[in-house]
Length: 427
Image (cartoon, rainbow, N blue to C red; front, top):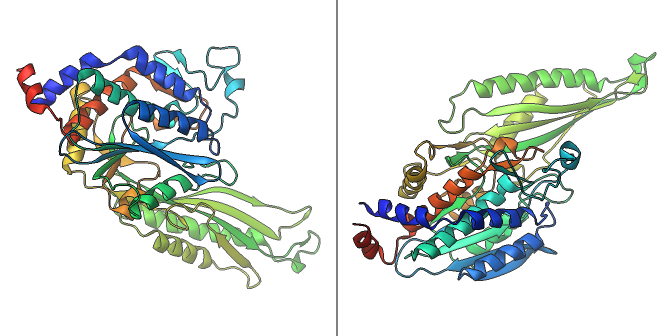
Protein backbone atom coordinates (compact mmCIF):
# COMPACT_ATOMS: atom_id res chain seq x y z
CA UNK A 1 0.00 0.00 0.00
CA UNK A 2 1.36 3.51 -0.79
CA UNK A 3 1.94 5.98 2.01
CA UNK A 4 -1.11 8.12 1.18
CA UNK A 5 -3.24 4.98 1.07
CA UNK A 6 -1.95 3.91 4.46
CA UNK A 7 -2.61 7.36 5.90
CA UNK A 8 -6.08 7.62 4.40
CA UNK A 9 -7.08 4.29 5.93
CA UNK A 10 -5.92 5.39 9.36
CA UNK A 11 -7.54 8.82 8.96
CA UNK A 12 -10.94 7.49 7.88
CA UNK A 13 -11.02 5.17 10.90
CA UNK A 14 -10.27 8.07 13.28
CA UNK A 15 -13.10 10.37 12.16
CA UNK A 16 -15.41 11.18 15.09
CA UNK A 17 -18.62 12.23 13.36
CA UNK A 18 -20.56 13.41 16.46
CA UNK A 19 -17.61 15.46 17.71
CA UNK A 20 -17.12 17.09 14.30
CA UNK A 21 -20.79 18.09 14.12
CA UNK A 22 -20.75 19.35 17.71
CA UNK A 23 -17.74 21.52 16.85
CA UNK A 24 -19.60 23.02 13.88
CA UNK A 25 -22.73 23.75 15.92
CA UNK A 26 -20.61 25.37 18.60
CA UNK A 27 -19.01 27.65 16.01
CA UNK A 28 -22.24 28.81 14.37
CA UNK A 29 -23.77 29.32 17.80
CA UNK A 30 -21.35 32.19 18.45
CA UNK A 31 -22.71 35.23 16.60
CA UNK A 32 -19.85 36.97 14.79
CA UNK A 33 -21.42 39.43 12.35
CA UNK A 34 -18.71 41.76 11.03
CA UNK A 35 -17.53 44.02 13.84
CA UNK A 36 -18.43 41.48 16.52
CA UNK A 37 -15.81 38.80 15.87
CA UNK A 38 -14.03 38.87 19.25
CA UNK A 39 -15.97 36.12 21.06
CA UNK A 40 -15.59 33.68 18.18
CA UNK A 41 -11.91 34.56 17.84
CA UNK A 42 -11.31 33.86 21.52
CA UNK A 43 -13.12 30.55 21.20
CA UNK A 44 -10.85 29.56 18.32
CA UNK A 45 -7.78 30.57 20.29
CA UNK A 46 -8.89 28.15 22.99
CA UNK A 47 -9.33 25.37 20.47
CA UNK A 48 -5.84 25.97 19.10
CA UNK A 49 -4.25 26.00 22.55
CA UNK A 50 -6.01 22.76 23.46
CA UNK A 51 -4.41 21.15 20.41
CA UNK A 52 -0.86 22.12 21.22
CA UNK A 53 -0.52 25.42 19.38
CA UNK A 54 1.45 28.37 20.66
CA UNK A 55 -1.20 31.05 20.25
CA UNK A 56 -1.31 34.81 20.10
CA UNK A 57 -3.77 37.55 19.30
CA UNK A 58 -3.85 41.24 18.48
CA UNK A 59 -6.46 43.90 17.92
CA UNK A 60 -6.49 44.94 14.28
CA UNK A 61 -9.00 47.62 15.24
CA UNK A 62 -10.18 48.56 18.75
CA UNK A 63 -12.04 45.64 20.30
CA UNK A 64 -11.62 43.44 17.22
CA UNK A 65 -9.26 40.47 17.35
CA UNK A 66 -7.14 38.41 15.06
CA UNK A 67 -5.98 35.11 16.58
CA UNK A 68 -3.30 32.81 15.30
CA UNK A 69 -1.10 29.96 16.38
CA UNK A 70 1.75 27.72 15.32
CA UNK A 71 2.54 24.13 16.15
CA UNK A 72 6.11 23.11 15.44
CA UNK A 73 6.62 19.87 13.59
CA UNK A 74 8.34 16.79 14.97
CA UNK A 75 10.90 16.70 12.17
CA UNK A 76 11.70 18.56 8.98
CA UNK A 77 9.07 19.55 6.47
CA UNK A 78 7.41 22.56 4.85
CA UNK A 79 5.38 25.10 6.79
CA UNK A 80 1.63 25.14 6.04
CA UNK A 81 -0.80 27.95 6.85
CA UNK A 82 -4.56 27.43 6.95
CA UNK A 83 -6.56 30.62 7.36
CA UNK A 84 -10.06 32.03 7.15
CA UNK A 85 -12.20 34.91 8.32
CA UNK A 86 -14.19 34.87 11.55
CA UNK A 87 -16.91 37.33 10.57
CA UNK A 88 -20.23 36.63 8.86
CA UNK A 89 -22.85 38.74 7.15
CA UNK A 90 -26.00 39.79 8.99
CA UNK A 91 -29.16 37.68 9.40
CA UNK A 92 -31.83 40.04 8.02
CA UNK A 93 -34.96 38.11 7.05
CA UNK A 94 -33.77 34.75 8.37
CA UNK A 95 -36.14 34.42 11.33
CA UNK A 96 -39.08 35.70 9.30
CA UNK A 97 -38.43 33.20 6.52
CA UNK A 98 -38.09 30.19 8.83
CA UNK A 99 -40.52 31.22 11.60
CA UNK A 100 -42.11 28.21 13.26
CA UNK A 101 -39.60 25.71 11.84
CA UNK A 102 -36.45 24.09 13.20
CA UNK A 103 -34.42 26.56 11.10
CA UNK A 104 -35.83 29.68 12.79
CA UNK A 105 -32.70 30.41 14.85
CA UNK A 106 -29.95 31.56 12.47
CA UNK A 107 -27.36 30.48 15.02
CA UNK A 108 -29.02 27.20 16.00
CA UNK A 109 -27.31 24.83 13.58
CA UNK A 110 -30.43 22.82 12.78
CA UNK A 111 -29.98 19.59 10.82
CA UNK A 112 -32.41 19.46 7.91
CA UNK A 113 -32.22 17.27 4.79
CA UNK A 114 -28.69 16.13 5.54
CA UNK A 115 -27.30 19.65 6.06
CA UNK A 116 -26.57 22.06 8.91
CA UNK A 117 -28.42 25.36 8.51
CA UNK A 118 -27.03 28.53 10.10
CA UNK A 119 -25.54 31.89 9.32
CA UNK A 120 -21.84 31.43 8.59
CA UNK A 121 -21.95 27.65 8.43
CA UNK A 122 -20.60 27.72 4.88
CA UNK A 123 -19.04 31.19 4.77
CA UNK A 124 -16.86 30.10 6.36
CA UNK A 125 -17.11 28.47 9.75
CA UNK A 126 -17.40 25.09 8.08
CA UNK A 127 -13.91 25.52 6.68
CA UNK A 128 -12.51 26.61 10.03
CA UNK A 129 -14.12 23.66 11.81
CA UNK A 130 -12.88 21.31 9.09
CA UNK A 131 -9.35 22.38 9.97
CA UNK A 132 -9.78 21.87 13.72
CA UNK A 133 -11.53 18.53 13.30
CA UNK A 134 -8.74 17.39 10.95
CA UNK A 135 -6.27 18.03 13.75
CA UNK A 136 -8.36 15.83 16.03
CA UNK A 137 -8.20 13.03 13.47
CA UNK A 138 -4.41 13.26 13.31
CA UNK A 139 -4.25 13.16 17.10
CA UNK A 140 -6.59 10.15 17.36
CA UNK A 141 -4.71 8.34 14.60
CA UNK A 142 -1.34 8.96 16.24
CA UNK A 143 -0.02 10.90 13.23
CA UNK A 144 2.52 13.61 14.04
CA UNK A 145 3.46 16.15 11.40
CA UNK A 146 7.10 16.65 10.48
CA UNK A 147 6.66 20.23 9.23
CA UNK A 148 5.18 23.24 10.99
CA UNK A 149 1.47 24.08 10.89
CA UNK A 150 0.06 27.56 11.40
CA UNK A 151 -3.58 28.61 11.77
CA UNK A 152 -4.79 32.20 11.48
CA UNK A 153 -8.36 33.38 12.00
CA UNK A 154 -8.91 36.98 11.03
CA UNK A 155 -11.79 39.46 11.00
CA UNK A 156 -13.31 42.09 8.74
CA UNK A 157 -13.56 40.21 5.43
CA UNK A 158 -17.28 40.61 4.85
CA UNK A 159 -18.91 43.81 3.59
CA UNK A 160 -22.25 45.20 4.68
CA UNK A 161 -21.72 46.76 8.09
CA UNK A 162 -20.98 50.48 8.24
CA UNK A 163 -17.30 51.24 8.80
CA UNK A 164 -16.23 47.62 8.38
CA UNK A 165 -15.44 45.13 5.66
CA UNK A 166 -12.17 46.62 4.43
CA UNK A 167 -9.98 43.55 5.11
CA UNK A 168 -8.44 45.25 8.12
CA UNK A 169 -7.81 41.87 9.74
CA UNK A 170 -5.80 40.24 6.97
CA UNK A 171 -4.02 43.52 6.30
CA UNK A 172 -2.81 43.55 9.92
CA UNK A 173 -1.89 39.86 9.97
CA UNK A 174 -0.03 39.87 6.65
CA UNK A 175 1.88 42.98 7.68
CA UNK A 176 3.09 41.14 10.79
CA UNK A 177 4.46 38.40 8.53
CA UNK A 178 6.06 41.03 6.28
CA UNK A 179 7.67 42.63 9.34
CA UNK A 180 9.05 39.28 10.54
CA UNK A 181 6.88 39.14 13.66
CA UNK A 182 5.24 35.89 12.50
CA UNK A 183 7.05 33.14 10.54
CA UNK A 184 6.32 33.11 6.82
CA UNK A 185 4.69 29.87 5.62
CA UNK A 186 5.55 28.04 2.43
CA UNK A 187 1.98 27.48 1.27
CA UNK A 188 -1.49 28.61 2.38
CA UNK A 189 -5.05 27.35 2.11
CA UNK A 190 -7.80 29.91 2.65
CA UNK A 191 -10.98 28.07 3.60
CA UNK A 192 -13.57 29.88 1.49
CA UNK A 193 -16.28 27.49 0.24
CA UNK A 194 -15.48 25.79 -3.06
CA UNK A 195 -17.48 22.53 -2.91
CA UNK A 196 -14.03 20.97 -2.40
CA UNK A 197 -12.74 22.26 -5.70
CA UNK A 198 -9.32 23.91 -5.52
CA UNK A 199 -9.40 27.52 -6.64
CA UNK A 200 -5.90 28.43 -7.77
CA UNK A 201 -7.01 31.76 -9.24
CA UNK A 202 -9.55 34.43 -8.42
CA UNK A 203 -11.12 37.44 -10.04
CA UNK A 204 -10.22 40.96 -9.04
CA UNK A 205 -12.82 43.68 -8.69
CA UNK A 206 -13.54 47.37 -8.39
CA UNK A 207 -16.71 49.24 -7.51
CA UNK A 208 -17.18 52.74 -8.92
CA UNK A 209 -19.82 55.32 -8.02
CA UNK A 210 -20.35 57.84 -10.82
CA UNK A 211 -22.16 61.12 -10.17
CA UNK A 212 -23.29 63.36 -13.03
CA UNK A 213 -24.12 66.94 -12.09
CA UNK A 214 -26.10 69.25 -14.33
CA UNK A 215 -28.61 71.96 -13.40
CA UNK A 216 -32.24 71.44 -12.47
CA UNK A 217 -35.11 73.62 -13.68
CA UNK A 218 -38.88 73.59 -13.60
CA UNK A 219 -40.34 71.33 -16.28
CA UNK A 220 -42.01 74.30 -17.98
CA UNK A 221 -38.63 76.02 -18.46
CA UNK A 222 -36.37 73.16 -19.64
CA UNK A 223 -34.19 75.58 -21.58
CA UNK A 224 -32.80 76.78 -18.25
CA UNK A 225 -31.68 73.27 -17.25
CA UNK A 226 -28.71 71.04 -17.95
CA UNK A 227 -30.24 67.55 -17.99
CA UNK A 228 -28.10 65.16 -15.94
CA UNK A 229 -30.27 62.16 -16.81
CA UNK A 230 -29.89 62.75 -20.54
CA UNK A 231 -26.11 63.01 -20.06
CA UNK A 232 -26.14 59.79 -18.07
CA UNK A 233 -27.90 58.05 -20.96
CA UNK A 234 -25.01 58.95 -23.26
CA UNK A 235 -22.44 57.94 -20.65
CA UNK A 236 -24.06 54.56 -20.02
CA UNK A 237 -24.00 53.83 -23.75
CA UNK A 238 -20.21 54.28 -23.66
CA UNK A 239 -19.93 52.14 -20.53
CA UNK A 240 -21.77 49.27 -22.21
CA UNK A 241 -19.58 49.62 -25.32
CA UNK A 242 -16.56 49.32 -23.04
CA UNK A 243 -18.07 46.25 -21.36
CA UNK A 244 -18.62 44.56 -24.73
CA UNK A 245 -15.00 45.20 -25.68
CA UNK A 246 -13.83 43.63 -22.40
CA UNK A 247 -15.87 40.50 -22.97
CA UNK A 248 -14.53 40.16 -26.51
CA UNK A 249 -10.98 39.71 -25.25
CA UNK A 250 -9.36 36.36 -24.47
CA UNK A 251 -10.77 34.74 -21.35
CA UNK A 252 -8.61 33.47 -18.51
CA UNK A 253 -8.82 29.65 -18.43
CA UNK A 254 -9.75 29.51 -14.74
CA UNK A 255 -11.74 32.69 -14.12
CA UNK A 256 -13.32 33.51 -17.47
CA UNK A 257 -13.84 36.98 -18.97
CA UNK A 258 -13.44 40.44 -17.53
CA UNK A 259 -16.84 41.99 -16.98
CA UNK A 260 -18.51 45.26 -16.07
CA UNK A 261 -21.99 45.42 -14.58
CA UNK A 262 -24.12 48.49 -13.90
CA UNK A 263 -25.71 47.71 -10.56
CA UNK A 264 -27.91 50.73 -9.91
CA UNK A 265 -29.02 54.17 -11.05
CA UNK A 266 -30.73 57.05 -9.30
CA UNK A 267 -32.10 60.30 -10.74
CA UNK A 268 -35.15 62.49 -10.82
CA UNK A 269 -36.59 65.79 -9.77
CA UNK A 270 -39.90 67.13 -8.39
CA UNK A 271 -41.69 67.97 -11.65
CA UNK A 272 -38.32 69.21 -12.86
CA UNK A 273 -35.46 68.41 -15.18
CA UNK A 274 -33.07 66.14 -13.23
CA UNK A 275 -30.10 68.16 -12.10
CA UNK A 276 -28.14 65.18 -10.83
CA UNK A 277 -27.91 61.50 -11.58
CA UNK A 278 -25.73 58.73 -10.18
CA UNK A 279 -25.01 55.14 -11.06
CA UNK A 280 -22.78 52.38 -9.73
CA UNK A 281 -20.81 49.67 -11.46
CA UNK A 282 -18.79 46.64 -10.42
CA UNK A 283 -16.00 45.42 -12.64
CA UNK A 284 -14.25 42.06 -12.54
CA UNK A 285 -10.64 41.48 -13.59
CA UNK A 286 -8.78 38.44 -14.84
CA UNK A 287 -5.46 37.46 -13.26
CA UNK A 288 -2.71 39.46 -14.90
CA UNK A 289 -4.81 42.60 -15.34
CA UNK A 290 -3.70 45.76 -13.59
CA UNK A 291 -6.50 47.17 -11.48
CA UNK A 292 -5.43 50.79 -11.82
CA UNK A 293 -5.19 50.46 -15.61
CA UNK A 294 -8.68 48.93 -15.71
CA UNK A 295 -10.22 51.75 -13.70
CA UNK A 296 -8.44 54.33 -15.85
CA UNK A 297 -9.91 52.66 -18.95
CA UNK A 298 -13.36 52.73 -17.33
CA UNK A 299 -13.00 56.43 -16.56
CA UNK A 300 -11.88 57.11 -20.12
CA UNK A 301 -15.03 55.38 -21.40
CA UNK A 302 -17.21 57.48 -19.09
CA UNK A 303 -15.59 60.72 -20.16
CA UNK A 304 -15.69 59.85 -23.86
CA UNK A 305 -19.46 60.40 -23.99
CA UNK A 306 -20.65 63.55 -25.74
CA UNK A 307 -22.45 65.66 -23.13
CA UNK A 308 -23.12 69.35 -22.57
CA UNK A 309 -20.18 71.46 -21.47
CA UNK A 310 -21.88 72.31 -18.17
CA UNK A 311 -22.04 68.66 -17.09
CA UNK A 312 -19.64 67.68 -14.27
CA UNK A 313 -18.64 64.07 -13.65
CA UNK A 314 -17.28 62.70 -10.38
CA UNK A 315 -16.04 59.11 -9.95
CA UNK A 316 -15.21 57.52 -6.60
CA UNK A 317 -14.16 54.01 -5.51
CA UNK A 318 -15.75 53.10 -2.15
CA UNK A 319 -14.53 49.50 -1.82
CA UNK A 320 -10.75 49.52 -1.62
CA UNK A 321 -9.18 46.31 -0.35
CA UNK A 322 -5.56 45.37 -1.05
CA UNK A 323 -5.53 48.30 -3.50
CA UNK A 324 -7.15 51.71 -3.01
CA UNK A 325 -9.67 51.15 -5.80
CA UNK A 326 -10.57 47.49 -5.16
CA UNK A 327 -9.08 44.02 -4.95
CA UNK A 328 -6.41 42.37 -7.06
CA UNK A 329 -6.95 39.37 -9.30
CA UNK A 330 -4.44 36.65 -8.44
CA UNK A 331 -3.37 33.16 -9.40
CA UNK A 332 -1.06 30.43 -8.20
CA UNK A 333 0.57 27.94 -10.56
CA UNK A 334 -1.90 25.02 -10.62
CA UNK A 335 0.97 22.63 -11.24
CA UNK A 336 2.59 23.27 -7.87
CA UNK A 337 3.26 20.03 -5.97
CA UNK A 338 1.32 21.37 -2.97
CA UNK A 339 -1.79 21.85 -5.08
CA UNK A 340 -1.47 18.38 -6.55
CA UNK A 341 -1.08 16.96 -3.04
CA UNK A 342 -4.27 18.72 -1.96
CA UNK A 343 -6.07 17.40 -5.02
CA UNK A 344 -4.87 13.86 -4.32
CA UNK A 345 -5.98 14.08 -0.69
CA UNK A 346 -9.48 15.18 -1.66
CA UNK A 347 -9.82 12.55 -4.35
CA UNK A 348 -8.81 9.78 -1.95
CA UNK A 349 -12.15 10.41 -0.24
CA UNK A 350 -14.26 11.65 -3.16
CA UNK A 351 -12.94 11.08 -6.69
CA UNK A 352 -15.55 13.46 -8.12
CA UNK A 353 -14.14 16.47 -6.27
CA UNK A 354 -10.80 18.23 -6.12
CA UNK A 355 -10.89 19.76 -9.60
CA UNK A 356 -8.63 22.78 -10.07
CA UNK A 357 -10.45 25.93 -11.12
CA UNK A 358 -10.83 29.65 -10.43
CA UNK A 359 -12.90 31.53 -7.86
CA UNK A 360 -15.89 33.48 -9.20
CA UNK A 361 -15.51 35.78 -6.20
CA UNK A 362 -12.90 37.98 -4.56
CA UNK A 363 -11.43 37.16 -1.17
CA UNK A 364 -8.23 37.90 0.66
CA UNK A 365 -5.54 35.71 -0.90
CA UNK A 366 -3.89 38.73 -2.62
CA UNK A 367 -2.58 39.77 0.80
CA UNK A 368 -0.69 36.47 0.87
CA UNK A 369 0.15 36.05 -2.81
CA UNK A 370 0.87 39.63 -3.89
CA UNK A 371 2.13 41.16 -0.66
CA UNK A 372 4.10 38.21 0.71
CA UNK A 373 4.79 35.90 -2.22
CA UNK A 374 3.09 32.94 -0.51
CA UNK A 375 1.37 30.53 -2.94
CA UNK A 376 -2.23 30.19 -1.84
CA UNK A 377 -5.49 28.55 -2.89
CA UNK A 378 -9.10 28.51 -1.73
CA UNK A 379 -10.57 25.18 -0.70
CA UNK A 380 -13.35 24.07 1.65
CA UNK A 381 -16.69 22.32 1.70
CA UNK A 382 -19.84 24.25 0.84
CA UNK A 383 -21.49 26.02 -2.06
CA UNK A 384 -20.86 29.76 -2.38
CA UNK A 385 -24.28 30.13 -4.04
CA UNK A 386 -26.13 29.80 -0.71
CA UNK A 387 -23.84 32.17 1.20
CA UNK A 388 -25.11 35.62 2.21
CA UNK A 389 -28.66 34.29 1.83
CA UNK A 390 -31.34 32.96 4.16
CA UNK A 391 -30.72 29.55 2.59
CA UNK A 392 -27.18 29.15 3.97
CA UNK A 393 -26.44 25.51 4.78
CA UNK A 394 -23.62 22.97 4.63
CA UNK A 395 -24.02 19.37 3.50
CA UNK A 396 -22.92 17.10 6.34
CA UNK A 397 -21.30 14.39 4.23
CA UNK A 398 -19.33 16.96 2.27
CA UNK A 399 -18.14 18.51 5.53
CA UNK A 400 -17.01 15.12 6.86
CA UNK A 401 -15.25 14.33 3.58
CA UNK A 402 -13.45 17.67 3.85
CA UNK A 403 -12.23 16.84 7.36
CA UNK A 404 -10.65 13.60 6.23
CA UNK A 405 -9.18 15.24 3.12
CA UNK A 406 -7.64 18.08 5.12
CA UNK A 407 -6.12 15.65 7.60
CA UNK A 408 -4.57 13.68 4.75
CA UNK A 409 -3.31 16.85 3.06
CA UNK A 410 -1.70 18.12 6.26
CA UNK A 411 0.12 14.80 6.60
CA UNK A 412 1.06 14.61 2.93
CA UNK A 413 2.28 18.19 2.66
CA UNK A 414 4.01 18.65 6.01
CA UNK A 415 5.27 15.07 6.12
CA UNK A 416 4.79 12.54 8.90
CA UNK A 417 7.36 12.16 11.64
CA UNK A 418 6.97 8.35 11.78
CA UNK A 419 6.16 7.79 8.12
CA UNK A 420 8.31 4.67 7.85
CA UNK A 421 6.44 3.12 10.77
CA UNK A 422 3.07 3.89 9.19
CA UNK A 423 4.12 2.25 5.96
CA UNK A 424 5.36 -0.86 7.81
CA UNK A 425 2.16 -1.13 9.85
CA UNK A 426 -0.10 -0.91 6.83
CA UNK A 427 1.90 -3.31 4.65
